[in-house]
Length: 403
Image 1 (tube, rainbow, N blue to C red):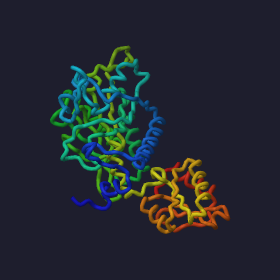
Image 2: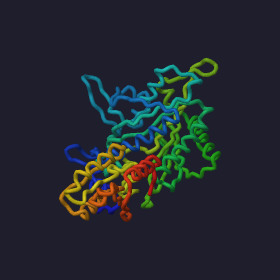
Image 3: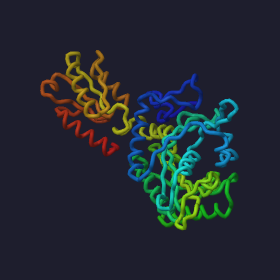
Image 4: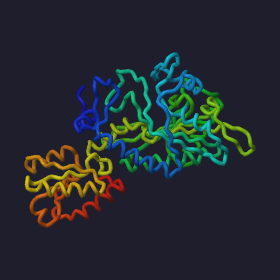
């Protein structure tokens, strides 16, 4: 099959953002350092925003006993997508999702209505046995690094929590450069847990919140999660391709099934309601989408190499390396190219690598203690002071500017 030049399956391997290997297996991408930097920047961005909103980050195992997933309902509704292993006579599941683990943490802590809502987040790799024929690039894989979180709250707090989640999704997508979004409300599927009355009530809560915010939405009947209805966000990339991304899922069942409770105002035990939510969906899939959205030319804050320093000739190498180190000391991701090639050839190579800024050092720059800067897709600028250049790109990185 021939892919379009803008397809992440073309751009990604060309820029060494991700790799596939027959020795590793289908749907299990390798992420070299170039791609890891981008994913790490996304993680830092999200973690910073979530900590401002009082999310607590947790860490959970990659294995658990089958009994956990029988209690949670995943065994009856999801086991065809699970991987299994054994330790002696004990059967274990390779983690397919985080929610039973987070709920177990909540269950083992002492919570009251005064401590709710509780928001647990984790950037965790989960594994799903997708059929080999459906696996493709980063869009459909067997390792899914989720950016999900679980919010444990009361019925009275649901409306405010959902509103805040919608604001958070909108903010994140704006920073990532997605402007065209739409919302779907996905309702009860054929396979589900819980009773019809609870499901109908949960669907009405989501409808009322969306209507209360004057948010237009499309109805997506039968496409909810097996444990509850959900709000799904779809965004168009720069190629006008639509992707289902963030999700907010309302769950009245999980805490009842796992016996997780809090103490209410009357001093009695009560099951909290769970909001499952993901902003990106998964880092792998979002990475593939962003590769296509930016055609590999990422904004400065995400770019694996932010600055490339080129020496005009061999006489400039030592001085160029000093400039390179000063840029690195300023916290900028920088590399030097001191090959015995022409400047034109080195510039072309840096442009093919989609580096945001190319710095060229020649005899004039050394003599005047300045640099020549070539912004990506623009003409070179001469006589720039290094301190001014560093200040500019630090601000560009901090503000996550999209050019």
